[in-house]
Amino acid sequence: MPIHTVTDHAHSDIEDIYSTRSSERSLPKYRMPDGLTEPHAAYALVRDELLLDGNARQNLATFCTTWVEDEVKQLMTDAVDKNMIDKDEYPQTAEIESRCVHILADLWHAEKSWDTIGCSTTGSSEAAMLGGLALKWKWRARREAEGEDTSKPNIVTGPVQICWKKFARYFDVEIREVPLKGDALGLQPDDLRDYCDENTIGVVATLGVTFTGIYEPVEALARELDAMQRDLGLDIPIHVDAASGGFIAPFIQRDLVWDFQIERVRSINASGHKYGLAPLGVGWVVWASKDDLPDDLVFYVDYLGGNMPTFALNFSRPGGEIIAQYYNFLRLGREGYTAIQQSCSDTAQWLGAELAKLGPFDMVYDGHGGLPAVAYKLTDGDHGFTLYDLSERVRMRGWQIASYPLPADREKTVVQRILIRHGVSRDLAALLLEDIKRALEHLSQNPVPNSTAGPGFHHG
Ligand SMILES: *Cc1c(COP(=O)(O)O)cnc(C)c1O
Image 1 (cartoon, rainbow, N blue to C red):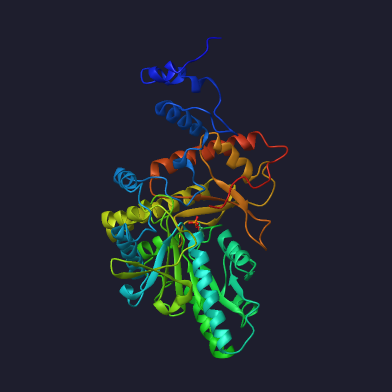
Image 2 (cartoon, rainbow, N blue to C red; image 1 turned 45 degrees about the vertical axis):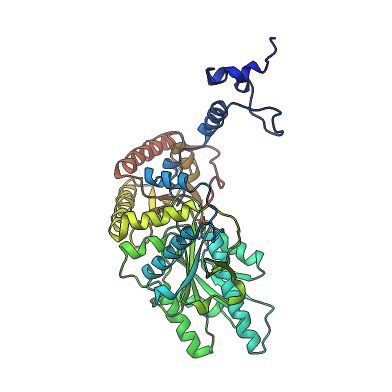
């Protein structure tokens, strides 16, 4: 064996990447290598490993952005060195974040959008933590002022995304997740009296339930809480988890009343990196007024003679996603967002109608009235395969489609969900449909003896 010498480095810029020393062995897994690797080779080797990842564009299990314009990539590169927390070094990034907050407050019908308070986060999960903390602080202050016990806070929800369970556990709040009864897919107004009490810090209503894509009836929930205030004296605020719906409803369901038009809705979160169309890593939380965010949760940072409130779990965080969010607001405007969300929604409804024609599926959500998505289950009876088998079969063509049970008490119902996002064209959806048809044909001719049963996907 010839011994490689340092001349390897000297020749590295003319060498073929796949004949460099580092390409002769597998990449380090447990220990940092002793020496250096030429950047082109290191890049190629790491990039090649990523070939094993699924193709994000065909991942129809995710709500998150998988297609961006070149200008977004350029802005992300331009901002790669900007830490959004350094508000005095990058005051314009801070200004852009603040503009996004007020634009969202306005989109969500805050009475005085210029006077609202809110912030960017890493996503809706962090936004939910902040929204939940504000509810908890407000509730505790109210109870203390009344001289009442503050040891048993609870939060009432329908079938929520995992972030609310995290919030509850991390911040010591009991979560009362109302089980689904009958055909219900979300929280119902009649549930509230049984689950709320004087220790309820708030009700979370979801606009775009993770499991199906439907919207919970925020206005009806608020009316029931109004009635409960009259009858029982409980004044319980609503936080709307509009992770996805916050960027859909304002554009294509403009008549739906779900946001700050409802007095009881005191805070809203949304994921910029879902239907907000920003690249991964940004969420938003906005409070109806400054009074809704208790001051002792806020830290003040002085910059440029101003006073910048910050409320966040993270400290350092990239600024690029926030800048890209603002780019999208400017680039697309209401007209652009409306066109994109409408075409996604039309495609979802088209796909829902086509899937319903195939026979073996009962539509659980057909794409009308909620997110651009469809959810369906197998019709009753033995098909010789499960939806998990179907997920696996279409995976052979690169499609990633989630199958999972509905939450309690409907966990016996397994559903499959397809999300239609920016970049999922009608043509791609038609190709998917053909692949589903072929997979169904194959599975009906080749029943699966030990059908796959088990969660293969996360609900993201
Ligand atoms: C995706 C989602 C979340 C979590 O949001 P991230 O941005 O992924 O942190 C919370 N709630 C709902 C309803 C969601 O769809």
